[in-house]
Length: 166
Image 1 (cartoon, one colour):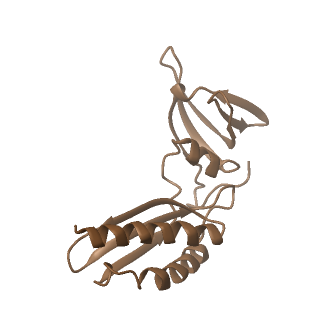
Image 2 (cartoon, rainbow, N blue to C red):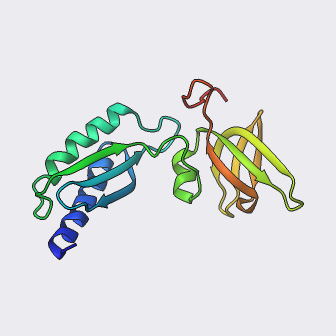
Image 3 (cartoon, helix red, strand yellow):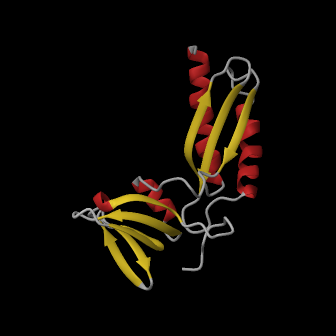
């Protein structure tokens, strides 16, 4: 990849982050795959809190960004722009993931020091200053060491949508 294209991709990422910010969104992932004449730009968006990102958000972002990046020197060739949410099946791992998913229903798979497995369903309440993850389940708040969390994802109802009833 030449320097002009690298610079254009960096400018496109900056434009994506600025555009997302003006719409109350965040860029979770920005990936450009240079495939010669038909390259691919994938951007995953999210919004902090229970609401998350919907199709209308992705469409508005795509329209706003498309006009900005089409004029960048180095991106003149054809590319496919794909904008989506990170997906409800994406693991919640980082501090940023926890911050964005606070207020959403989650399912956590836990393993204690003795190796016993537990599955916990509840609402992600955030991250403590000491790094403990807080989940409210059945009215009780649990503080979990990240070392005990094997996997944490958004809770999905049987219809495939996010659960919001907890």
